[in-house]
Image (cartoon, rainbow, N blue to C red; front, top):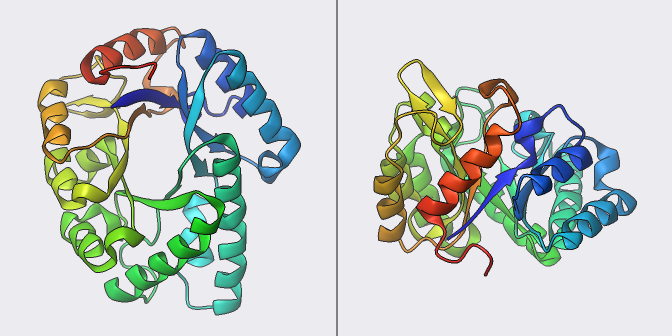
Length: 265
C-alpha cells in the first residue's frame, strides 16, 4: 500500500498552491481535486505534472468539482445531457491519465432523487467505465452519505453485477456519517476496491486528521490486507478540520508508519 493526500484538504486554496505546500510537507503521492474548467486544460496540467516531477512525486486520481451534479450529468433521464456529461468526464479521465493517475472519483446519484433503478444505475456506470477506459483512466464509485452508494448492499450488488467494469473508493468519514463500518464497506467492495480516502474520527467529530481521533488504524489495515488491497491510502479531510497546514505533516508520518510497506516504491 502507498500513502498520499488529496489537494482537497487545503480547499479553497488554489490547486497548484495546495500541491506546492503539500510537497513541501513531504507528501509524494496525490489525488488532485480539480476546481475549475481551466484546470482541465493542458497548460495547467503541465504545470502540476512538472512541479510533482521536481520532487519525484506521482498522482493516483482526479476528483471532479462537478461531483454534486453527477445525478444530472451522468445518471439522469435526459440522454442528450448524459452524452455531454460523458464527454465532460472523458476530459477528467484524460487529465487523470496525463498526470499518471488511474481513477476519476464519482459520487453519483443521491438517495430518493432521480428515477434510475439500481440495475439501470449500474448499467450506466458500466457504460461510462468502458467509455473512459479509452483514456487509460476509469471511474471509481465512492461511498457517499445520502447517496445510493452509502449502502454496502448496493455496493456489493454493483460489484457482482459489473465485475471488472467497476472500481470503488472507500471513504472512511463517509462510512462514519452513513452509519456503516469501514470493514462492512471494504468487504462489500471486495477485490474492486481501488482507492481509499482516509480520516480519523471520534464521537461528535466524524472527520479529523489521522491521529486526532480514536480510529483503529491497525484493525483497518488488517481489513484491507484481508481483501488483498494494494492501492493508495489518501488522506482526505476538510480544511475546517485542522488548524494549521503543518498538522498535515504529523498526519503524513502517522499514516506512512501505519500503512506504507515501501512508501517510495
